[in-house]
Every structure is written in structure tokens, then in C-alpha cells.
Image (cartoon, rainbow over all chains, first blue to last red; front, side, top):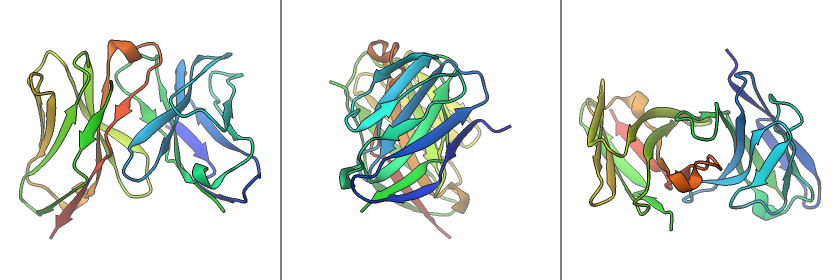
Length: 113
Length: 114
């Protein structure tokens, strides 16, 4: 009964380092997405995918890359971390883009120093 | 444009009712959601309402939708300390049906005092 699993839970990076945030779902959902959560700003969409091999940009995509080689996995890559990317990152999946319920992972708290 | 606004903080006593309010700007919103985020956890869908409904009740939760004023509220009856969390209002519209994008408010922190 895993749902959406994110790793790691916490990460500290130095400015300029790269890393990959992992996200996996076991519900055979077509749609997966990444959000970032910043204080007083709610959640903002970074990138999303409507199926394996298909990705697109959300409202705050700069500095992030994604790929979707399988239905289950949707990793988020930070190419050259900046302090402005300090945030809590959430991966979410849905059966399809229009499905009512979105399932969220536990989040990854990233600090860039 | 798309915007969802919430007040940032609400404090109530255990046993009282809590009312968390949300306003939105997109008149074409189709579904409106309430999510709960407990400390250190992800977001959990509490309930949602379709835009052609005025009210939805689910045990201690009552959602009221005023489409004319674009106002959504979540009432929690007999609030318990376990209800302490951040509550997010979110909406989707036909414009976001292809992207699956949820528009979130800033979140309301509910503090329940014993």
C-alpha cells in the first residue's frame, strides 16, 4: 500500500551542486507532477507528465529537468542548485490529468546553502 | 487569471467549530478541494465539491460553496487537537484539464488549543 514514495526526505546541497529527487508510484497512474511549497505561497507546479515519454513545463520550471521513462517513476533533477531552490518538494500522481483525487508523496525538504 | 486566497492562521478551542475560508477568481472552476497537511507529511485530500453544488457534508466536515461570490468554506465541527494542521484550498478548471494543474491557496494553519 505504498502510494507515492519520495526520496530523500531531507537534503542539504551546496550552491552549484546537482541532485535528483526521486518519485515513484505503484498505482499505475498516467499523470505525475512535481510541486514546490514555499511559505505563504501554497504549492506551485514545476513540471508534469501525462504518460511515459511525455513531459511538460508547469509554472516554475526554470532550473529543473524531468524525464518519464516508465509509468512508475518521475525524477526531478536540479542541474545547478541555487539558494532560491530551497523549498519543500512534493510529487503527486493522478489516474489521469482530470481525475479528482491527487495522491501526494511525503515531500523532500531541500536546503541549498 | 487564476488565484486562490486564504487567511494564514486560525486558532480555536477544542470542541468548538472551525471555519476556514477561501476565495478564488476563476469563474470557470469545476472542482474545488480541501487538502490537509500534517507536520512533516504530504497533502491528504479531505473532500472536494463540484462547482454545481452548494454544500457537501462528510461526517464532521461541511463544505459550502458560494459561486456568485467565489467563496468556499470548510467547517469542522467539534474540532479536536488532531485537526491541527495546514489546510489548503485548491481548484481546477477546464483550462487546466490537460495539464492537471491544481491552483492552491497559501494554506491556513489551524491551531487547536486544549
